[in-house]
View 1 (tube, one colour):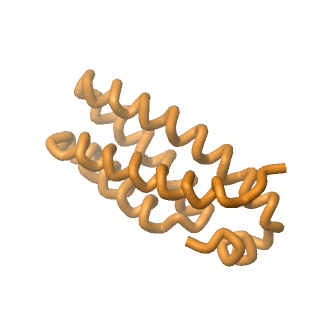
View 2 (cartoon, rainbow, N blue to C red):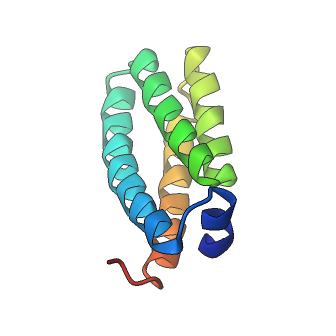
Length: 109
């Protein structure tokens, strides 16, 4: 994952991109907490909405692996299939951790 390349592909300076990534991580972690609650409540519609939000944000920033996992969760929830949702939420969390590790190597202004 090369932030410089992702920033360039979006027409952003690296510091602008890293600021967006920091905001994305904060928002996505809150969404993950909401996903767990929605799953505990068997609320497939809410799971779908939250997964869609993560998918869109991740895709916009160029995090295609994360977007693909969120897309899978969204599609499953759309079909009221929550059987593997917790596993997908765990994968999303791990991918966010990886992005956070990369972000930590960049100075945030």
